[in-house]
Length: 90
Image (cartoon, rainbow, N blue to C red; front, side, top):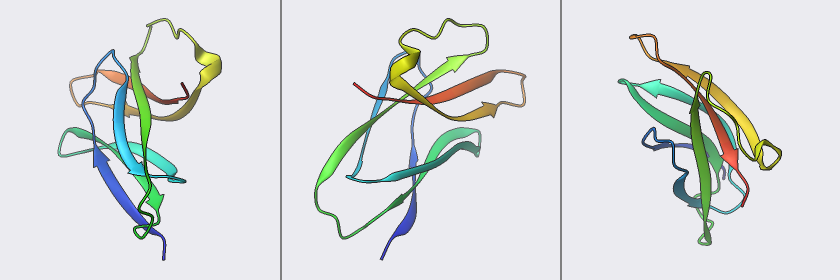
């Protein structure tokens, strides 16, 4: 039976590799306790793991290689910082 799981990641200008069961369906990225998390629908019985790649871009930063990225969500910190989260396909 499919289940929604969450995965914490670090904001960085570098891609973040997050292991998840293959065929995960990415739902959103939001802050929880001021830390970014990805929520995804997964099959917890799926033993094959893949590395999903995410990258955060602050507002105003160039988006290199946009054709190989899928927009996931925008997150806003209380101090005014705004990041746009993309899933990267490499």
